[in-house]
Length: 311
Image (cartoon, rainbow, N blue to C red):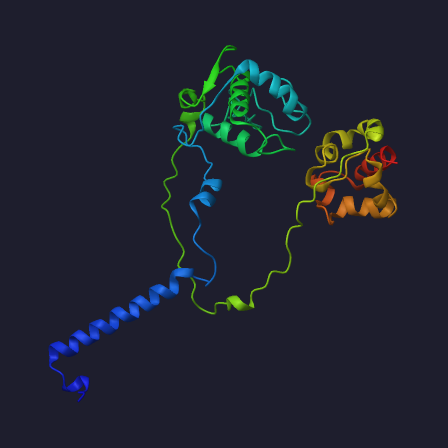
């Protein structure tokens, strides 16, 4: 024989109410395990480790390794001098790495590693993540130590026999470290908007970046043709960054086979793609290669030189 809750003793009714609340909370927590939007899964330790590559100023996060100024000089000439200059002076509009001491109060301050940067760890971290420009994350840890040591040497911060290691990197202090001031503004966080939210089922992927397609090996016999394009100053300073190495699917100058179907489209079409940008099957061409200061005529001349060198 059953009784309704209103006929139960007060303590028993209270117990049933608490049990119902606990059950409801457990259902809510279970429903929320998949995230706010109802999809995804927790990141694995391996996935987290792949992204956890930052380096702190105190050296935490640095991998074991070492590199000398001497070794760094050879690596720098091979992988860095083309853009940054043999002495860190910068080529064209590429960043200057050395010099600029005492210029931060000038109308046009010269911001370099030695004159402006705050931490040596930032230099190591940036080289590790993003350099060389055409082959980011291709350097080994010892190579990064060596290049960091050489850039420090270019700024007269270490001697020519210096060896940079995991243990001593944090002890190399940059001159401008004390000029940075803490940001006293409070941390803030916006509240989650829970009104008029879109149904996750209605959200569709409309486009994706193209998958990486390895470039076929260039024809060695055609390699010599690239010198014609190299004589064009715009190609040499801007276009060669991608078109001399095949970065992002860019056709390498001198590769006749790869250029043939492009040349068949006609010069006007090629110039239009170069000026306005173009999404191809193997990669994307940014408008003017990302250098918006170039004129349309300069881009056309560069394209013409590449076509001439690739026929």
